[in-house]
Image (cartoon, rainbow over the protein chains, first blue to last red):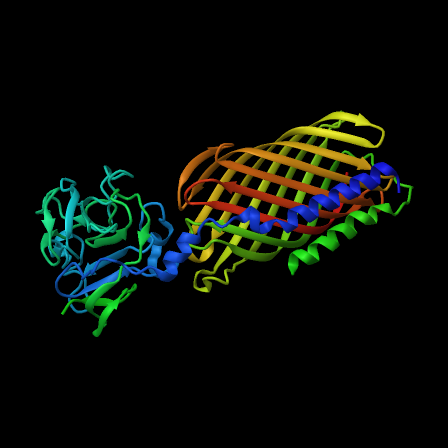
Length: 240
Length: 237
């Protein structure tokens, strides 16, 4: 073998050996916190469902299937978020459901899920014109529509979103207690129908934080009492 | 296990270049090539799932067209495809299907020629679209890099080439985000090593090793590593 060819072969071999042997280093261990939260996180806050009567989960859970689009939204804290609609029997709306007012949830009472202090409020965004239509003024800055953020004073924060325009009855700085009414459900922001979006996160920033799994206490999940748990997509939930 | 297998196979492919036979001269300007092989990959995409690392194995298929001018400028187009499943032993519930199409364009000019050595330098553009098909999630990336190609003619039938590309820009349009990245937050290395043996005036066979690495240093970390070992046939015209 000629020296130059031998050198080429040796260098190529060394390169391949190096590249194949350092896979762990190249992929790195970033994401350990994500895995730890996935497996072990237990909410510090004692949460209860933030509504009366029976609601149905259209999104919520720890898989892509259950979480839907939320599961991809790590940066905005939505990974473990819930989307819930108010139902009566198996229906979410009366008539043909073509107007916001047809939805049983439109104007339904929304409560604080736990004690805390209101740290941000948006209450002036028009509800979307009708279900299935998002108003053209909705953009990345107002995806949550009308919302409140509650600081639970323990490093956890609750975001409740898509309230009916003008329905929020608390203001920044107010102290709220669990079960206290804070507003009415609506169809504002990035919403294709009346629903409540709820997420627990580790920062006070609107749609910017690390989403946390949220366990609710003392509720019924498909008519089975749960002392503490995480409801998932396609379940019916109620407090009493 | 798979990586351990890859190393000796790669060494074998490269070492086999010591075989000598001299009858065919490579004077053809253009070529079409098809190769197929095995990919061992790993990916981290924290936007997609809270998983430190997914691994995957896949058959991959590549088509390549090369056009050479009389001044030995090279224009290369390469299409790669693989379809597989991402697997994590840590959280199996989040395993997912994964498909990837990669389209490369390279334009290379000769910058050094001496004896059996030829070195080309130029630019490479890579478009890749990855699909997490079960969940209607996609990740489209347009990247640009500087490329260098080193070729060594062992004899009239045999060649060794290695192409190294350092990407410096990425445009990412994905279910997770729409952003651009340059070298501060995006780094990568793409390396292609080939051993070619000429069967006749019109046909060559090839053993190919590809290394592909990309990383985004952002909060929603993204990294992907691929080793590919392919065998291919090339038609020259």
